[in-house]
Length: 236
Picture (cartoon, rainbow, N blue to C red):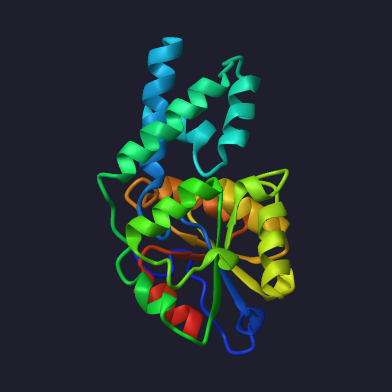
């Protein structure tokens, strides 16, 4: 899979040409990290609650969401987690981060393009997001005032609150924003916010026909699996 997987093209006069703000998700987009956090929670849930969840099941209920939303989802399934569970989960994530991870190939060209106004809006909490940004060394590009996290709003993804906050703070209207997401909850939030949702599926866990079909069913028109083609689309 590569390129314009939906077959959509960027035409002169298309409404996306007026977009003024790029809003980046972090996990699964800026770096291939979403699977790391899902695996940590999958392992902990299986051990603590004697579950037999595979990765796909864990990702279904936990992927692309804030820990607050994940906890609510588990509550609905009758899996009651306490504060210590989530403290331990965060500690496991920090241990994973200390092993290091890399920026997605080709993304720095977009980050460094001064023609774009850009920010980050992620389902992670502020402290963890700061550590992730430090790990991939993009703090100079994304200072605190350009970072928006789930603990800054009442309702996380798939609700649109976080993206609305990012747009308002960055001085742009929702219709002038492009959101680059890898998760279905994130894309749903972008659509609900009235923004242009772009699916990035360059990470191995998302780069498959079944996932592409789920993205299409949401109504997302633009799907990319590499940053070079995404960059070309943004510039066109």
